[in-house]
Image (tube, rainbow, N blue to C red; front, side, top):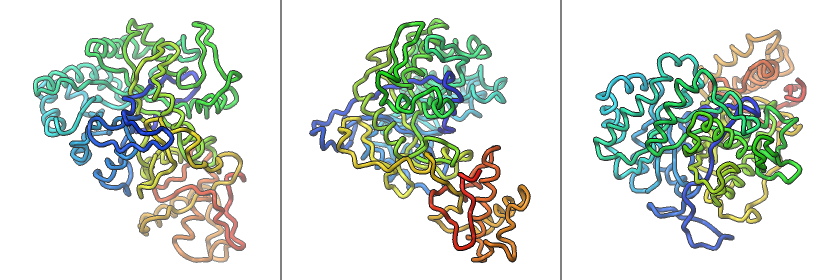
Length: 484
């Protein structure tokens, strides 16, 4: 997520979802493989293309992966000219983002808005199909910019729209992705309501603008976080679109039946918009997905669950089901994300949302068009590491080691707690082999196991990663996640 919008509780999320354009390929469903070239190729779920990593393929190679996967669109977190250039001629709709920091100046000056469009959009159209201009990212989640930015979002959107129209690209729709925490309540869905501090001052003017311009309310929503925070009350099957009648939920306020958590979240947004008088504004899901890995204390983060969520989501959205409150509604949906991004801070799940590894191999198979029969997918691995197996934190492999950075990280880890690195000191059980690489893995793991319960992460500026393979050797024993 760009930060993957962390929905904190079950009644804290709302999501707009649905499918973008259906695949137009006339290929037997059992062997569907779309070669999505040009504007009329196969269209499936959209994909977020984040770049918070130091090992990603070129923009050209990345766009080739999008096309091969049948992506129905792509969302980027800036106006990266290399990516926009690589998308030229592909027909893939792209949603471009304006940084949060630019919003106040764009709101205050039409000239500034025109200059931004001239520099970041105009050079790329019409060769690149810019579909949406997204003004900021999860601005209402950052209370530090409340005074400077919140009320500036709609004026900035208005100025940018004028600038786009003046340059002949008026078909570009404007919006702003908001996280689940824009809602004060979302359970049951009929009780959905926006926070009091933003409802009238910020959201109502936003909805008025979106309604007048035919644009979307973009929402970042993750059933994973809602489930992970409420595992005792929410079924994993319900969160993964595979629940049966025993897991279905009936909203006491409307009598509507919900078969999955995402629909429930989306309809909470619909209800919240209705309470402000704009219940007809269209929804778009700007971020959703499921992590394929994480730290030892992050339940449910596995390749098996990630593949299940995204496959079921794609299959569902290919039918344009809408939601119980909006049956048949069509909604753009963007998965997070194209790649695992090794430089994202925070817990391990932050670095495990990708459809692809940076080496361009798939984390798991998924047909974004949703047309591939479930039984034709290869078998999935068990939900390793997150269902009772041990997890360790070690020095990340796969690239040259920055010795100075690793040494500094080891020094930091060893200075935390008491006796954290005693085993790698002279005479210690893990002193040998006496190498920086070996000592780094021990130090990172010792630190993480001790402090993960109070916010410590297996990250170290991208130098560390989690593993389910025990790194212990000889008399040197590495503590595992099961020991804490």
